[in-house]
Length: 284
DNA sequence: TAACAGGGTTATC
DNA sequence: GATAACCCTGTT
Image 1 (cartoon, rainbow, N blue to C red):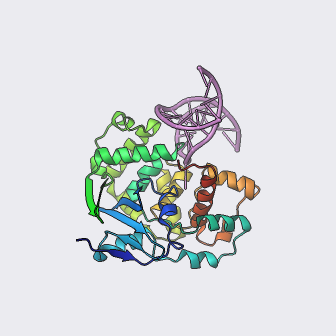
Image 2 (cartoon, rainbow, N blue to C red):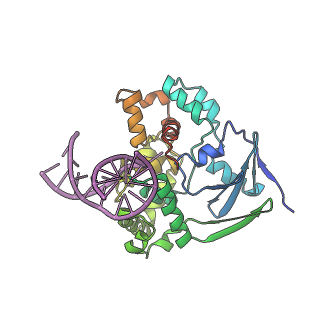
Image 3 (cartoon, rainbow, N blue to C red):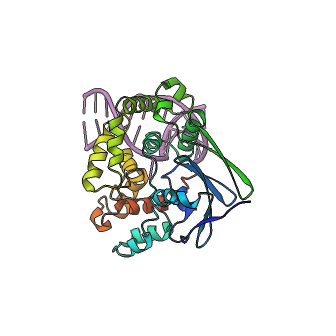
C-alpha cells in the first residue's frame, strides 16, 4: 500500500519541467509524469499537478524539498514588486515557474566545473557517469513504478581517482581540474565548510564565496557565479555565459544595469537563460 | 570532409 | 585586453 504525500504549491509558482530542465541541475530525469532525482540521501520522486506535487518524500523529511526547491520564497510576489523592462518581462512570462535550487555544494562545484565550453547533453553524460561509477545506488518504488538513481560521490570516493580514469567518462581537459579540486578539498576540509557556512548569506558572503571559488583551477568568473547562485543561493549572483552575453549585446546595447533587478538578479538571469536557450533548443 | 561551437578558463603576449 | 589552446562530440 502506498501513502500519498503532497506539497501544496501551484504549477505557476513552481514548474518542475522548467526548473529541473533549465540548466541549473543536470541529474534529474523524467519517465512519464514522474521526475526523479537524488537530494542528499533520498531518491525523490515527484509528480506535478496544477495545485500540488505528489512525492514519495515523507512528511517528516519534507523540509528537504522545501529547502531544495526554495519553497520558502514566493517568486510570483517577489517578481511583481520589480519594475522590469519589456525584455526581462518577456523572459519572465516564458520562464515563470522556475525556482533557483539549493543544490549540494560539492556536487554543484563539480558539475559546473564540467560545464565549461560543453553541451548540456555531454555535461549530463559526464555527471551521470561519475555518479554511476563512484556513487552509491538508491532504489525506490512509488505508485507501482520502480526508480533507481545514484548519490553524488563523496570527496573521499573521488580523491584517489586518476585523471585517466576521469577521462574515460568523457571529461576531456577537465579531468585534471577535477583531480586538483578534489585533492584540495580533501586535504583542507575547512575550505568547503567555509563555503557552506555562507549559504543563504549576504552580499559579503557572495563576494567572499566567488573569490574562494575562483582560486580553484578551472573555475573562473562564470562558473564561480553559477556555484554561488545554485549552491550558495546567493540570488544576486549573475553568471554571464555565451547566451547571457548575447542577450546583453542584443537587448541592452552591451551594458546591463543589474540594480534594476533588486537583489535577485540571479533569478532574472535564469529566466533570460531559459528563454534564450529555449529559442536555440540548447537543452537537447 | 572540414569547420564550428557548446552554460569557459588559462597562459601568454 | 586580445588570442590560442584545451578534450571531445554533435551539427552544419
